[in-house]
Length: 149
Image 1 (cartoon, rainbow, N blue to C red):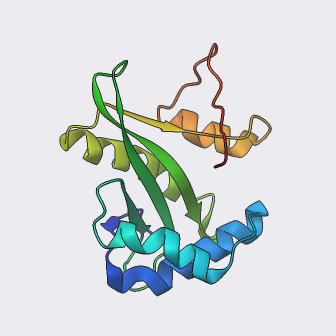
Image 2 (tube, rainbow, N blue to C red; image 1 turned 120 degrees about the vertical axis):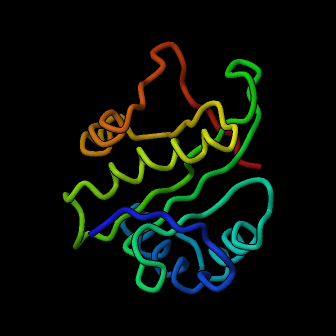
């Protein structure tokens, strides 16, 4: 099994909605399918603010990753936040997520991206190990803060 990444397109919406629903069920995120479609469709239609990638074969993806683009003076240009990453439970522990987390930043760097950020629960040791294997490091004096509008 491979972590081959395919840039999401409008024809992938139904497959992605199903994967996102599975991730949200695991994470305890409550949303309707309509809300998921509203959040995903612009990414698949080419909105410049982010992108969704399918992990694995596009006809039967085993996961996905969503990134959102921004700009950072500190990092010297275009940056991105990994909004969500998910791999189906049945294929976990095979290095697929690690492979995807290494391949995606490399590909994005070729497009001019300067940094990739993510948020992780400090108690999620499996995710912490995954992200560290992929080269992500915590910024000890920094904490992500949010304000819902």
